[in-house]
Image (cartoon, rainbow, N blue to C red; front, side):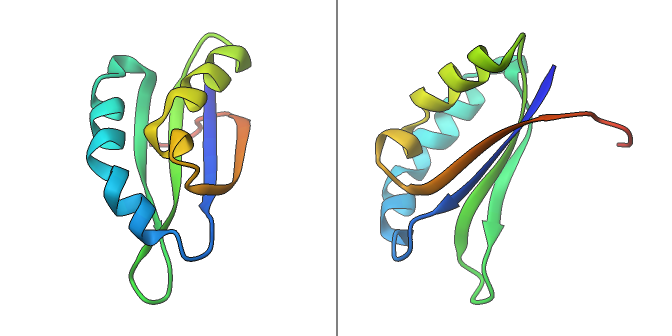
Length: 91
């Protein structure tokens, strides 16, 4: 199943994002086929302000486990994280 991870950064947390970006990207790259697509949201000033990650996992529990281990989560970057079952129709 596919699950969209939709995360919004805490206000003023750009430095936290930048400090943990290398570890986060390494985690994504080390996740193999679990990651279908990933990238940051961008605010009006052109700064990263959140994340969208499409996970391919067996169930919601696997998505929750993956999300809990993300270095961004561990660094308390996010104000909110939503995991939503997603159906790929196009692309």
